[in-house]
Length: 96
Image (cartoon, rainbow, N blue to C red; front, side, top):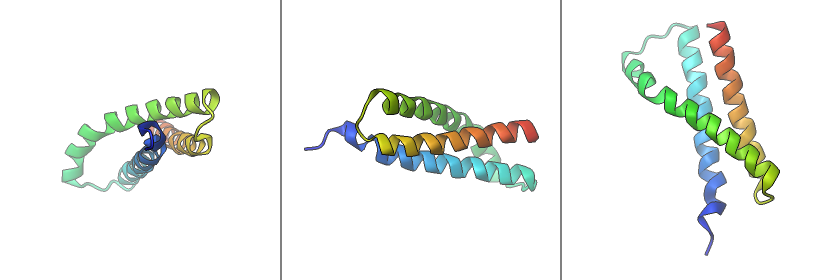
């Protein structure tokens, strides 16, 4: 039977990808001034947890890369996805 810790990269990778797509969508909405009333309320609720998850997952993947040898390749991919999300958030903050 597999340990639960071995399944961490699969759902973390999925959520990291969803977070990156969400941040890209927010950037597209802001850049093209797309006004979707339903998403306005959802952005207020979802954005902060996505940002906290992205930063926390990035730090956790750095920890797993440098201090643990299991699933190193998966955590490198997760770290790069989260780094892309953080870079996109920084670019949106500085340019918009």
